[in-house]
Image 1 (tube, helix red, strand yellow):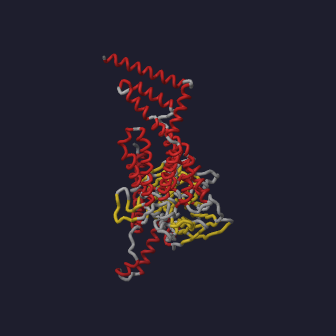
Image 2 (cartoon, rainbow, N blue to C red):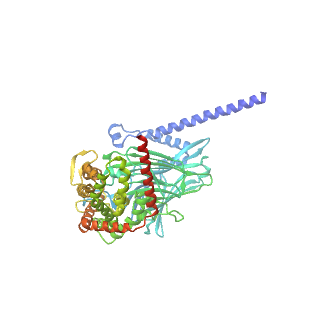
Image 3 (cartoon, rainbow, N blue to C red):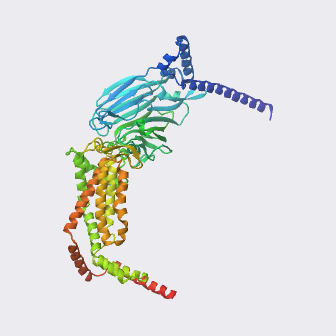
Length: 639
């Protein structure tokens, strides 16, 4: 290495060492500042009682020193924004009252005009507030240049200037400004609409404008939107509300949504792909932050609050925003409102396309969800326009569903009745072929008997299986239906929550600390229906006699424990469903007796005599013949 190379290396080393020393000193100053601003302040009342009279001279000196440090690290403009007095501004329409704070230019408090928090009957007068104001905020995180250092900035820590509310044709707009450097500032604009339209009643436009910010921004490819909120308990049952409270999000272009797993404790997920919106979802209300041009990634988390705290969950979401020097604006929308299908399904993006916000309502998978969206909800909404009692609406809806599935119910009963009528002939076949070697012959004779009687061995099960999606659709609909919220019927003061006739001084595991009368009546009706069904089945299938307890009592008891804390509207629906089904089955049994079934079987047998066998029957008989021949050969081989 020659002299020039050695001198070059030395100079480069000196420059590097100097840069490290300078950076270390700057970082030390910044850490000292952070430790001072994060120190816990003594409450004013305690200070007055225990502390001596303050020396204002030293306080002023400390304040001036702190401002100097702020100005050195963040610049004079942001340093001044820390000391500015906080203000609140309110905008409202017929559906929302939104209180804004100039601290962070955040939505501080959102109150829903049409919904009240749960309270006993005649005491529901407290409006629903979506989240606790104090710990909830939205802040933009980015890095700005300060010499050779990059300084982190979170806008939720700074007080914006209130530029006031302006009114236009059907809307009102609040503008707040944060000066970051001379001629470089952020503008936050919130627009609330006065004109009634389902797509915008609960929607605010939220725009962030970056004016000349590229000259102070550090080199970075993305910014972060940090969003936090702690939700109140608004419903009667903590366990049920907590089960439906989670964070949901949607990938661009998808018709479905994703959610963190529901439950207790803490859940966290990092989404590396683009996200269209993120929602802090409660049982009946949601707040969703919608990015017009999508978030680049999302890191979401919730923490479950204790049961007696008055809260359900604390939500946190860090959302990525793509950035380059040409970025001057981010456009968002914020939905703050009920999980109501008629409202959510009308929210669209800037191009008029639906964004699947209605999927926040857990109506079930593709088949169950289809039944709820296109059958149950339209009928329910239609009836609610003309009938004021939701108990009567549920009764009518139950009757309509039973009429819809009546053909299936009739076929199921008829199949069971036919099996009961031909039982003597089945017993005769069992006596005729008692040996295991004759199993094929017995099966073939049994199929021939079923054929003559026009009996499908699965005829009693298939109709019940077809009804399961409807039963499951009702199970998903009632706990998620905000229309039932706050609606009373008989002794239940809220059909969306459990009804309680006795509050227990203790809690029974898996049951709860109360007694739900609708759940008890539902259980009694299930016992009656199960006993009725057991009589029909046991008479034709002797092997069912030993399963009496399981069929008649076990399932209703399990349902009682499960449904005691569920929506009383759901228990009421299942009660009506069981009673109506018992009535229908009793009527069918009265009008379709065994003699009529015998006559029907004889007519079918006569028809089968002259009926040409199908290709399937011929193939089946040939297969049975081959199996019998194979069994005979195997038996000869053993001998």
